[in-house]
Length: 387
Ligand code: SF4
Ligand code: SF4
Image (tube, rainbow, N blue to C red; front, side, top):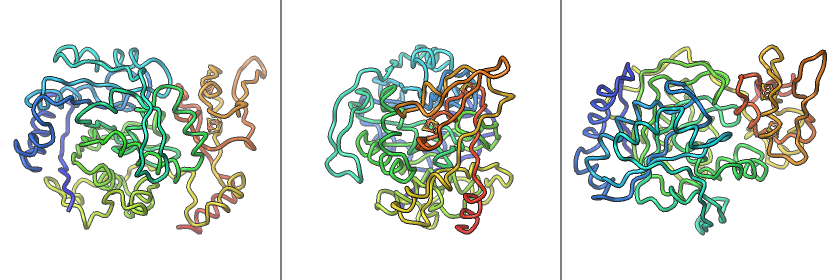
């Protein structure tokens, strides 16, 4: 049975987080568990969520004090620690500096990896994807500890321990995966393969302040006072999604694919939750993001045929848009789906929806939260029937 530690932590005070995480490791097996997880002086890579260039404390990214608390613990077992990520848009060095992660890392002699150097790798026993170009640092680490943020996600409903490793794909190559895997179920199979490839060993999920609503970048901060840790990424994600209001893990694309492909445990009854009780930590009024691009109730062939009719569309909130054109820049499709037009002295995007694959990169990376996802009337009816 998979084990996860569920911890209540009401503050981002680094000393208190460290204490809580040490309690979590004690629940999981203490020093011997950690020695097995981090063999002496092994090459450890910490993988926080640095989705974009954000100030320290932003709910978009892993909190800097969670990062520091993890370093304090890992340092007891290895002095060969690095951290890194490749943001969806913008320079990883700037993202590391603005978030405060770089300064904390320097304090503890933890090396920064910008994930710009890549390697080609093969994954023979894959669900879907065998050939990869991937950042060298996570691929070559001995121990990969992922530090995801608990957030909603327009395409995948939820982003956490499994999805966090998408940042191991260097820079703009991420866009090509969106083009190759336009629907969420294939995209999630790819994410599972990616985690197999980099051998993600352990997850510590930052849900002290999570993100609800229009995530993963433009939602609202939501205090959940939660840390979840465990070896099984899917078990950690399953418990996290339960806490925000999903009773069935199979409603979450990445957990459905994990279950279908026997990749990891997703059902609460098969997960031993140590520490807090799940029922005590559930957040009843969490604003979910149910506008994702999945249609499991019909076959993939029919899905593709009907996609234009029923899939949600990205829509601009004109009052919030500053006409910066980032949405068009990050769109992976060629030619671009989005054009920036000027009307009455104001610039804003327009979409050619016939060509849109609904990857929602534009929504994810708009700096102003000016894009939301909306269903057509038919899409709404079909989804209501599904539930
Ligand atoms: S929608 Fe967002 S990314 Fe696109 S132009 Fe407006 S502000 Fe920029
Ligand atoms: S317009 Fe947005 S959702 Fe559509 S393909 Fe481009 S980035 Fe993806």
